[in-house]
Image: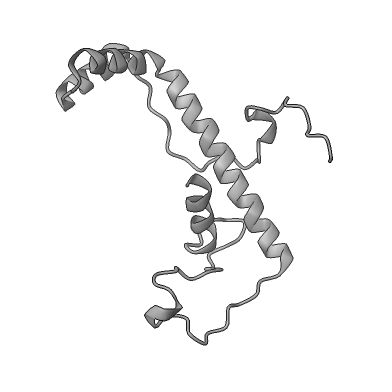
Length: 134
């Protein structure tokens, strides 16, 4: 799902500085039998722009994963307290949750552009053995 949203961000909504403010695809709402795209030609984009799209999608997914992991690690005390409270009483009100945030001294994440690098080496499972060619 994450890759799907990232791909739509880049290809449909033009939310990539590398690719630019251009819609490479149109949203697919309804099939060809719903009166849409009957007889319309799809624009074929070059391999260079599509390669850039793939790199942008990978960058967004990788950096989003690393950012989410960092937020969870930074707020592990809050996560543990929330889990324990939910096991004990099944429901946490917004006031209780806000008190937990204060009690644990939770850290917020800065809202900024996600990193410029692909960061493949920082992802888990980098040391898995290669599959033998069959």
